Image (cartoon, rainbow, N blue to C red; front, side, top):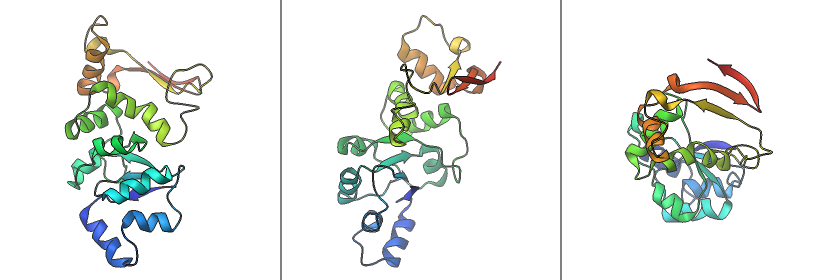
Amino acid sequence: IQTHLSESPGEVELVEMMFPSYRSYTDLYYRTGILGPKSVMAHSIHLLDEEFELLKKTGTKVAHCPAANLFLHSGRMDLKKMEDYGIALGLGSDVGAGPYFSPFQLMRDMYYINQLSPLEAFYYATLGGARALSLDDRIGTLEAGKEADFVVIDPSSLCSADEPIGEILSQLMFRGDDRQIRATYVRGRRLYGK
């Protein structure tokens, strides 16, 4: 199941008005059986501590959609609290309100509203996203035996290959776009290449 949870204060208020017998928006999902390890909740911005507990207890995952949250002025997801509760989280775009799909731009927005390094942002865009989708046994890293879904990126137009990895990732996150992508592979098969 993939749906939205607590994206805006107005949405939370509407759910509380429509379903007054539930303790919270998250409690509504919990008691109706929507939460669980195969469920991904987009946004999850306006949560009470007990709601974080329900997400943790059920193994529910979260898709952080920073571009949509900035675009809609809907609030800021508490990344630190998600991490403290051990809730699996991946980077998302939210096609309904997100103005773009580029992982570089999404990581940039994630950085703007959270305190994290480029390395952490790349984690949420790759393995973190795979874990949020319960697909980390098949995708998210370049380990032998995985499906080999990846892009080949050439950062040479942004920085020297001799730079430390943190600097290369920073340049990609802040200045990267489709011009650095040389090829795209899905399940080991090249689908795009320059």
